[in-house]
Length: 288
Image (cartoon, rainbow, N blue to C red; front, side, top):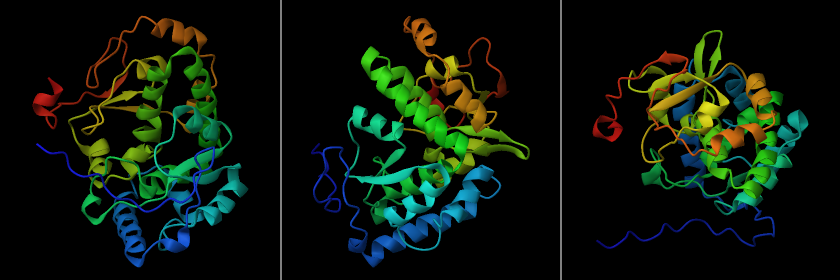
């Protein structure tokens, strides 16, 4: 079977040595702005009562739902005033070292293209809606912002000692698909969920996936899939607790992880603090 032709995305213009680009905000078409508005409106109907309070507060204070694709310079000015972070445009996925260096210096790299009309429900590569709507709001929270910076610093160290696989699992199970316990119940904070209407409901309300309390070593031993919804969601107590875990010395942890023992995505392990044992019904044969 012949492979489908690659998507043609918007022209990025010159790429700097750190892989940043000019967003070229004025070049977005009315149709592209309308796509952002449709995606934002759909998610804002779903997220109240499901997203973390910090996320919902920041979408308002950062004016992410005011209309049209945000201008990254103006958005960065508002964000920098709160936590010192800026959002920088990039042409797509960037090398690991570049990505970690940006995070370590409080710069969040965001793709500048927006998905096509036929990708509104699912897109394989991160676009500006995923990167900005999904990731940026929580960078206005001081504890979460410090955690992302610590993750970037940890990533630079992990590259040098060959532990990137384990560190990537931490990113996936928290930054992309994490849940947090709040006074009103479990809430979403992972950007991969925030930008997916179906997973927003699935992560909290479907009986299929496991929901397990966060443990750093457990998370870093747990494999994940990128082609389906999550079989296990990990629940943190707070962003402060997540930051505390990230600030620990990872040296002894990496030594324990060196045995290579990994847990499957839907596996329940001895010692897990299970909040909900999933039925795995939604995954069918994939969970076997």
